[in-house]
Image 1 (cartoon, rainbow, N blue to C red):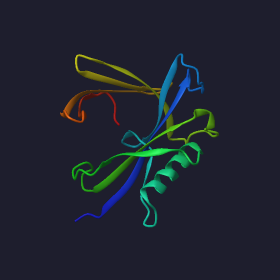
Image 2: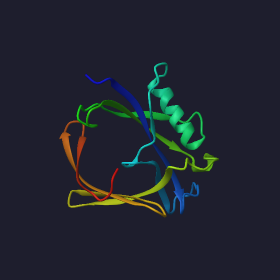
Image 3: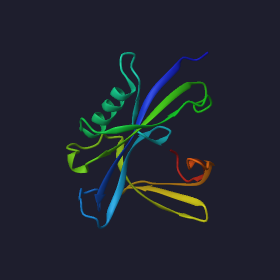
Image 4: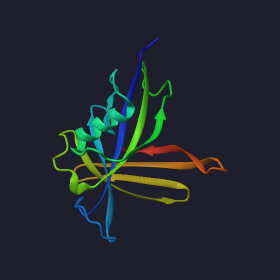
Length: 165
């Protein structure tokens, strides 16, 4: 049996105007997210959990490494533990979500990380999500299925991915 690997990743969002210049006004806001380039495509920044750290502390380390910002409010979003997610490995990934003030990001992102602008929309039950910057364009189409009508919880099925994530 393979060793279980625990890791965290973080969805780091920033609200901004234009090319991610921070602005608190109500007009022309953009939502951005940090993605990290790997040999297999783009992914969320993350790290493997060390023996002596909690998930929350590991998420802090990723956020500091990527943005240079400490003491950011974050919440645990979801834990992925499907056995066939990564062939030959049993990886449990816990995702966190954080919203940062782009103005506080005092340093350049790591060389393999980039801000992506998030756009998209919904038409005839299909959701189109577009992530873009000056160099890259990533697009996913998916459908939402409500699987618990009392709580409104949804499940999403990817229909088409035009790039590697």
